Image 1 (cartoon, rainbow, N blue to C red):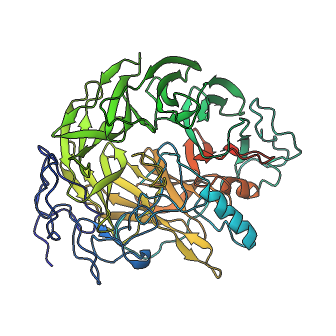
Image 2 (cartoon, one colour; image 1 turned 45 degrees about the vertical axis):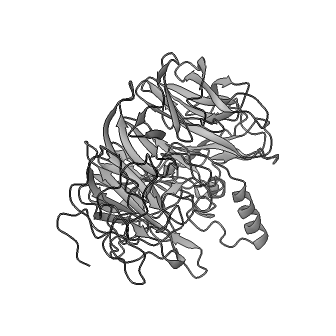
Image 3 (cartoon, rainbow, N blue to C red; image 1 turned 30 degrees about the vertical axis):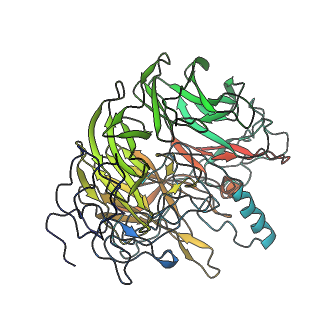
Length: 608
């Protein structure tokens, strides 16, 4: 099938969802569409023009040019433009498409086993390396069982094109660190910076060129068995802040010594990816301690002073407004609280209400992505299956532009708010799509790739946070995403992958950088014109941070964590990763309330 001229790039991810009234139409007519879908329910926005953003039905052979990447049996990516095959992760990852990934990190982090398409939860384990290599079946079974205990969490994330010939393996820099001999012992965390009462020295065995373990924290909070989200970290004024169970705690970034702590009577149930520019954080709390407690309380915490501020209750917007869970996002001086198709916004300065559940074209904000822009994903119609995406004025709630999501598609993740990069899936077609929007909400490009993309996102069933992926990074003109891990080695346990840079103007691959033998990488953030990536640990190799220049090439080592502590680092299943001021912070997405005598690890920090 030939593609009409001036169409969106072929081979992108699955198409977006239902179009909305008043939303800008795509710049040009896309490839031929599948059979027309049924008439939308009353109140649902009209269907977008035929062709745009609609995936091709998965054919027995390579997919025809189209909007989404359909999933294929066995999760093997197709070789055609769009219709990518299903991958471990949310939906079938596009064959030639970006990622087909799992899990990512907004501010919080990884998850267990991925679903069948990009953006779905990642498979158990921290992903990367040969964690089970050489381990007896009993240990493997226990580790897998532990994965099943992991609940929802979220962490920041980062974010390809046709297959190319493999490039040279990643190499570490030859820069030598100070000798490990006599290195200070790492604080293993009693909450006061005195360290765990054992003879362990986590820096014993550290090799030249490897970073130090600055400190390691274990959970000192008595909490019931179950899944409890670990929120953060956030950084301000020389401290790193983490929110666990019923408290928000700040630690000195160098020593791990507790600087301040804000306790709560009830359990935390929500937290945003970012704070305000002045270090103000708003968290969600339950209104009681029973199983029937609702997540409907907001509380301000000033990270610069370690003091709690105002408290307000999130009132119901309508009869169908529920508050069993809540998703928070901060942009400017506004924090939004979203609950199952209904959202409210409050001013961070004083907790007063900024705006309520504003309806646009019969659609209401189902969730928000925050940061430098406030992006709303609206549900429309009586069944809420149709969607539209809007940029919203954070102070008033007024829309700046509207993008109608093609019918049959759902926005699952927002990989970036500036520029706006959306990850969409089509359950019926088992397809996915990555679409980038212009400043007016019209389509800029769709990802075109033969690769399966795989950032780390949360369990799709548990974590619906729009920014809950690790491994998706974007600057003004480029999107960086990790490919699905490839198995290797005689025993099949070795893992490797690439990071692919995509041109946001065309959706096509610019370059790719391989992680190297038995190594995997996830993009973390930009530093100038370079993208920083986390090299994931394995059972016998430490992780670290590498940088890749604007023209690609082999990764250059920035920080290499010790091989001697690889097992501990790898024990942070589906870990959250932050790298700032030369320090690498590893955190878990959840805690289980385990009574393990050594305690659950809550944060591990490496530095030079």
